[in-house]
Length: 257
Image (cartoon, rainbow, N blue to C red):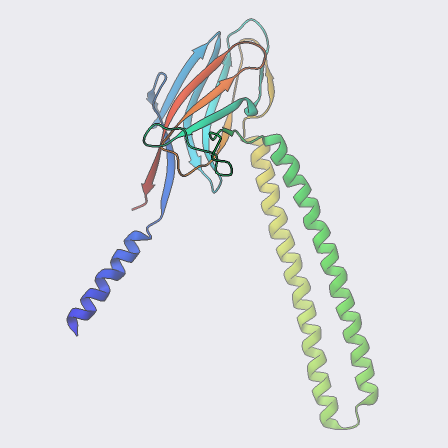
């Protein structure tokens, strides 16, 4: 009996170990790599354009880089996150294939903050519309309940019928009120979450900017995550000249302790 218990405990522990949470991160593997304030930072330069990048964090859909671009050219430079893209590779240095069409190699373009801001603004409006629709529906339920209550009070012939109908309608009123309260709280929480998300895209992300000569811009670059990736080549191409820069990053899967 004890042996069976020990075996059960052993396999339970194995199961817990196997389900240990893990996360992904990127480590620079090309360019001028240096440790700065506890982070690995890489730097490359071409035609007077300087690109500095380091890994920042992971979210459910992205691996996020902290990037800075310096304009040391003789003309203003248009910086746009969509000019960043990457090709993912597997452990055999083969290009990963497109998930939806294996005939083509995978390529991922950095997420456009302007589209995200537009989408979250639209979602906030939709959330308000859902609350209005829910309130109208709750109002119709309340009207129907009142009508039923009035009808029952006129037709109940016994004390037991009156008591039963009073209890049922009181419960219905309470459910409608609680539903309305819950709908309002849910809408406020969801709207607050969306506003926070929009503020992050507005204030933290690298956004489309015309960069004057001698100045720099810094922000977060959101790269769509592909968990199949072993390493990737980040490409940055400026639209006005022939500047083409690449940086290699190793993608690591790390199990949390």
